[in-house]
Image 1 (tube, rainbow, N blue to C red):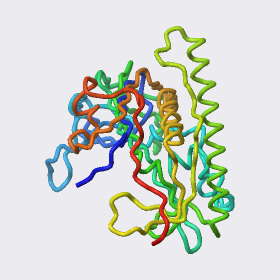
Image 2: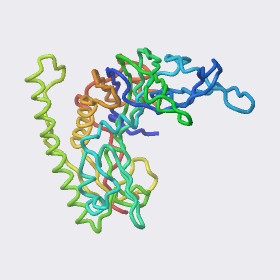
Image 3: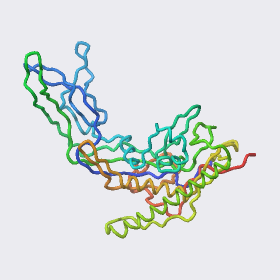
Length: 358
């Protein structure tokens, strides 16, 4: 069987540092000592997101769940993490769009021809239709590796109790963290990045067009947007080389043949019949612009909220052209020794081709 060759995905490994908790999980019920030294439960113990943590130990007493002590947390077994939804939100925070705004549907071309439309993706339900663009970005949770959490007991003093009134004095606790170090992984799918469907044949239409002329205009608008994006990337990276002596990257050369082309029939390679969808296909240079844009967003990712912060410190990329299933996300499974950190002269895989109806 013939397999599609070329760079099939751009995978990456992220190391980030920070301090405190940036992604809380709210309050949970835990076992504590109440009045007269009797065991009781409280539901005002705040915890961050901890992988696989539950305050119930699985046993039941008199039909009621048996809760853990708040100090009974093993941070190696239930590590702190920042959820992929939180990471994705902050990657695209400066390009956010209110998808509930009815004005968005009136100009879908503006949404599609943007970083949000091309990289983050969207789903918009309208009367009698649904527009969607699947994100080419896969990203994992960022898992904390130092495992140095703390249990802290707090109290807030208020007015003293009066007869028939408990006052407003409260006692609560929470898990906190000091310095943190996170590890995360991700992947950019070339197949999902390369093709933009404008046809509802396979229920993935990105937006509606009335005729081929509108499709060609949309492709021209997208090409112009990618060309401007390429110029901005070139300016940014070349300034980094000049200003930062410790910058390890190289000068950004830019691209001379960026094209987004509209075809009446876009056929997925390997299909039995020569029948596909109306859509736009990005050529190799156009794909590379979007990959480099994604690299820029990841390298400059930071989160500052909830009395804590996190920022990316190191990123390694793998231009993965292996056709072996076991090499999927090899940067995670096999380490940095086997990766290809640069595109070099290789081409991205061509999953779709513009064809004519037979």
